[in-house]
Image 1: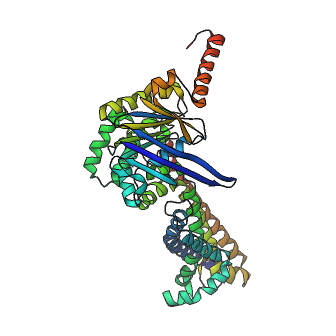
Image 2 (image 1 turned 180 degrees about the horizontal axis):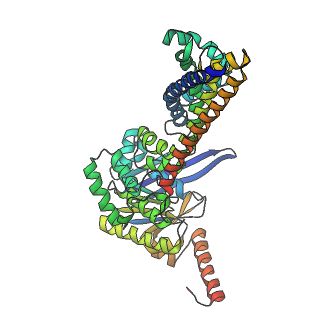
Image 3 (image 1 turned 90 degrees about the vertical axis):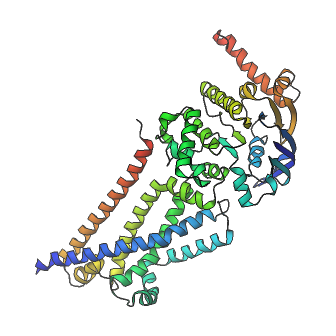
Length: 259
Length: 222
């Protein structure tokens, strides 16, 4: 479904050149939930933004479905993007539009008729369990509800791929769990390919099948999520696991209740 | 002596309101597209055109740095060309519109730049064209801020019409100079000031109310 071949990306910053991605290659199967983990600055966000062309790699190829994203012109890229949904850490909903209008936006710009839009939006609202909030504005919603609207908006055009850029990082654990449940559910019902970028270990462990570990712009480890967690080899993953377990142990000792 | 005061002030007010209304509309029609242009063609904007952006910015600065009264004089030939005269309210509207449009452009630019980049990026990630983004994201998202900015601009235009009054535009400004200053009619002078204060207050109030009602709708909790 998604093939990334040898992409590299360098940013020019006032303090000099920063190599954010170095020769990244990966393969994501159709219907997979694929995770990318790394510390801040490892290049996760740049990688996922390359997938829908928000960022252009300096070299290498990205192929999604039949489209070679890295070769498309403006118009072709726009039409390819309609089949690649994206959700964000800060939700990025339109405050001037109601929940209904937010979800209708991608359909409007694709030129659907009013009737068709209404049918589709109502269907999606049901899927994300927000039907009763259809006339609310984003500022009137909780974080979890906002992200549900974000997901609904990303799914409105019936995409083949959903990109999640730290979509649960601004949410509390319980809400994170419910959003992940939703993503898993959608993945099964719509056989959607989902790419999840995160720095939350539990998120990966809970819902991804395969993953890569990014460190300093390159992939240091990749494979089946369960196997990687059982036998971490890279520094990043070892650190992640130690830190997370460390927190849990501390909690056990201090609170005495475990978790 | 002072029984003509009311009549003078009524005519002056009417002329001023006429000039402010028409100048605001024309300045708005010129200024808004230029403001949008400044934002979208900027580096990192949704349709970057570096040269166009620099040229537009430079022209705006030139007009904005010219003192208003000089700008009116410079634009007199244009007024003559468009409305056939250099005197009266209609002639002034040409100069005032052109003189105020750059200010409105900057205000619009300012408001649009406050829209979080993430929202624009979200629209881009859905395959929106630059036109879609301008119409359906940038302008609606910035609307409360635009309304407040336009209110400031209209109040600026009221000041502009008073200055135009000094060189034959009519209105309250001309009244204050011709009667209040040159004929020592203090009653006319005070009358014009009072009316101008009332107009400005009213416009500010209306602008605030509109901006507030937009925000209220968006923030309201059921």
